Length: 422
Image 1 (cartoon, rainbow, N blue to C red):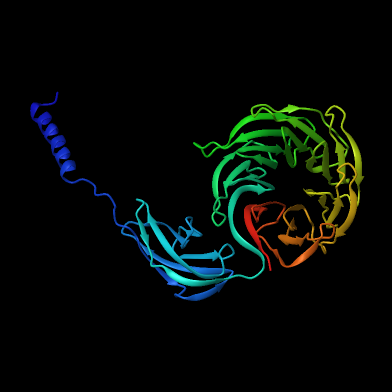
Image 2 (image 1 turned 180 degrees about the vertical axis):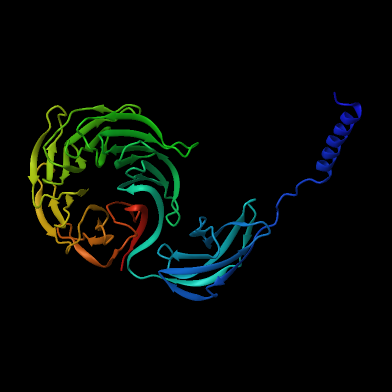
C-alpha cells in the first residue's frame, strides 16, 4: 500500500509539472525566412526563359521557395530543396519590361519576400515548354475540361490534375481501378474512363478527398476500352478488338449498353458527328458508322491506307487520321456520311500516334520525337512549321489541345506546351 507521504510527493510532482507548463509555454514560430535573389542581376534581358537562383534561410527551416512575376497572382516556379534554382518559361509573358520576386515559406506558414528584380522578356517563335507533373503509372491519354485534366495512367489508374496554373500543374485526386486504364473523356467534373479488360467507369472529382469517386461501372466482355467520346448523352467507346461500344450516359450513376458493333478490327479511337461515328482502327484505317439506330449500326465508308489507324481529330468540315508510320491523312467531311480523301502528310519516319488541334494549328504526338506542330491554314494540306517540334521528357503518345496549350500524355508525365506564332 502506498504511504501518504508517497502520494503527497506524487501529487506535488504533478502540481510542479503543471506550474512548469504554465510558466514555460512553447513559443510559436513567428519569424519569416530571409530571402534574396542571387541570380540574375537586375535589368538583364532574357529570351524564352530565365534561370533564377534564390538564397533563403530560416530560424527553423524553409518549406518552399516560389517565384512570382509582378501582376500574376500564381507562382511561375517552385522549389522545395536548397539550393533553390528555378527555370521560368517566358512564353506567357508579353515581351518587354517585367519584374519578378521570390517568396520563401517556412513550416509555420511565415512568408519572407525578396526585393523585386526588373528584367526584360523576349521570346522566339516555336513550340515551347511551360510545365509538367510526374505521375504514377504509364500516361496513355489525356482529356481537358475547364481547369481539370483527366489522365489515363495505365496501371496507375485515373488521375485528375488542376491545370489552372500551367506552370505548376497540381494533383487533385486519383482512382485506382485495379485495372489498366487506357482512355478518358471529361465533361465538367465528370470523368469517363476505359480499362483494358473491358471496364468503363464514371468518376467524379471529390472536393473533400484526394480520391476520385466512382459512381458507375460497366464491364463488357471482349472489349478493351481505348479512347472515348461523349456527345450529348451517348458515350462512344473504342473497344479495341471488340469494336464500337455505344453507352447511354444520361444518368451519372448508370451506364447502359446500347448495342455493339464488332467490325473485326482493332479500334483505337472514336469521334462522333451527329448520327455518324468515325473510327481509327489499327488494322483498318478509318471507318464511318451510321449509329442513328443503336440496334442496327452499319458502315457507310472505309479508308484503308496502311493498317495503322491510331487517332482522330475532327474539326469543322475536316477530319485528320493519325496513321502511325504513314503520317496524317486529311479528309473533307462536309458530308459526314461521305468523306473525301484530300492528302497525306508524310511525317518523315516519325510514328504519329496522337493528333488533336485548335484553330489553325494541328498537333501530333510522335513518340521519341515528342510533339510536332502542323499548319492547317489550308485544311486540306498540312504543312510543318518552323521550330514546331518539342522533344518531350518521355514518349509522346496522345495529346489534347485547350485554350492555346498542348497537353501531352508523355509516358510518366503530363507535359504542357504552347506554340508561339511567328
